[in-house]
Length: 409
Image (cartoon, rainbow, N blue to C red; front, side, top):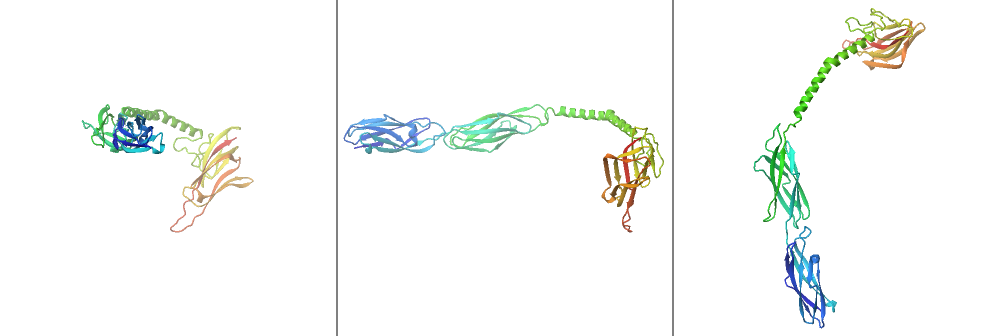
C-alpha cells in the first residue's frame, strides 16, 4: 500500500513578484481507495500552494495537482537555488507516504533608490551634500557615482566614488560641489548639476539626480557695513578720549595731588625729595629733621614724605603723626641692615629691622597705624656691608623710605 509521486520538472524558475507552477502526478499503489494530502516542505513552503490540496484515488489510479510558487518581490527573497520537497500523505497507510524533491530557481532583481540631501547647498568655496543609496533588491549592489555639469562651472568630489550595499541595506556617501571660480563680492549665483549613479549590473540603467549649488561671495554682504561701523566706533572712542576722558583724568589727578599737598609746578617738591606734610607747611629746606605742623585740634590732615640717609627724621610738632603706608627702596642692591627707629625722651625703640639683601622694593600697609607723638622723631638708620676688592667695589648705600599717613591735632 502507499503512493508514488513525480514532478513534471525538477527545476522550477520563478521571478520575485510573479508566479510559477509545476504539475505533480500522484499514483495510488495500494489496494484500497485512499485519500492523499499534498504538502510543500522547505523554505519555499511559505510561497507555495497546491491545487487541489488533496486527491482521492482508486487502487492503481493516478491524479494530478498543480504546485504554485509566488515569492514576494522584496529584498528578503534570496536570489538563487532553493531546494523544496512535496510530501504526499496517505490517509489509509501513513507509512506509505512519499516525498518528491525539486529546486526552485529564484531570479535576481535590482530595485535601487537614491536620495540627495539637501537638494540645494550654499557656500562661497564649496557646497556639501549627503548621498543615500538604498538597495531594495535581492542581490548585492555596487554603483559608481559621477557628477555632470554641462557648463563646467563646478567640480565634484565624491567620497567614496563607489557605493556598495547588501540587500535591504543602505549605503551613504558625501558629494562636495566646488566652483571653478570664486568671487569676492556680488549676488549669489545658482549652479545646476546632475549626479549619475550607475549600478554595476549588465543592462542596468543609471539613476539620475538633479541638484543645485548656490555659490556665494567670499565676503558676506554685511562685511562692509561691519567695517564702517568698526571705523566709526574707533573714531568715536578716540574723540571721546581726546576731548572728554583725557582732560577729566588730568583734572582729577591734579586735584588729587593738590589735596595731598603736591603742586605740579617745577621746583615745588616737598622736603625730603618725596613730599612733605599737608596743611600749608610750605617747602622746608633740607635738614636732618622735618617738622610737621598739625592741623587745628580735632582735625585730620593727610601727609606723605620721604626719608633717606640725608633727610632721615620726621618730628611732629603739637600733634600726632599716624603712618599707614611704608615703602622701602634699595635701588643699588646694597647689603646690610636697615632699621626704622622711633626716638623719644624716654629712649629709642626699633620699629622695623630689614635685611637689604632681601629686597629692592618692599611695602607695608598697616590697619593700626604707627603713631609718632609730639616730640618724637622717626629715623631711617642704614648699616651697609659689602666685600671691598679692587674688582668688586661695594655698591652705593642709598636706601630710602616713602611714607604716607595723616596728622591729627
